[in-house]
Length: 123
Image (cartoon, rainbow, N blue to C red):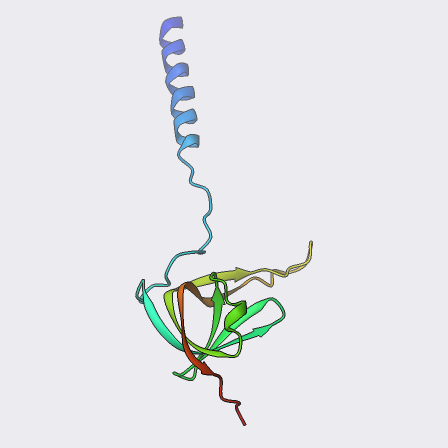
């Protein structure tokens, strides 16, 4: 009877240890394309900068938030960007307060081609 209890106890401990080891850590959406969007795109427009954030005023009328790439030298220039759409989570929640986390679509820049034109001012 004692041997049976030891075997069952050992099996229980082994099962508990294995099931606990199978938990997966939470992963952010950084670097993943949102569902339904292609992995690779080319977009064109004017590179702008506000503070530390770069955007592209696209020829398609969309303001694209940019990530990656060395864009400083292209501010005020018409460019063609190659890369992929993704999502960035921004959380400005204060400790103890309700969550203010939100997901923002971004474009992860892989390459930049300067078209040689400066941006037209918008009136």
